[in-house]
Image 1 (spheres, rainbow, N blue to C red):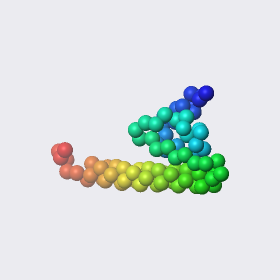
Image 2: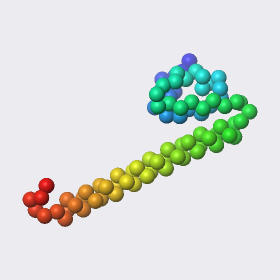
Image 3: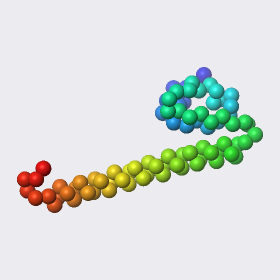
Image 4: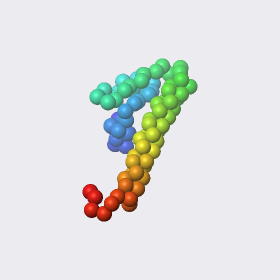
Length: 86
């Protein structure tokens, strides 16, 4: 049985890393990558999960920084544009 909170997390996930029998309970779908591992590789599985999350966070930070830079440019343009300009 999967709780509603667990199902919501699975539905929102792009990657699932876990022990083979548990990962095989997840229904494959577009946009979801499943990583099955043996139960004897806990450290490798944890490292893979952390690297995946770290890559996602760095991507999210890069996108956020880019958006913040664009917002600053837009604010500066609005502040400095000649009156009557679009």
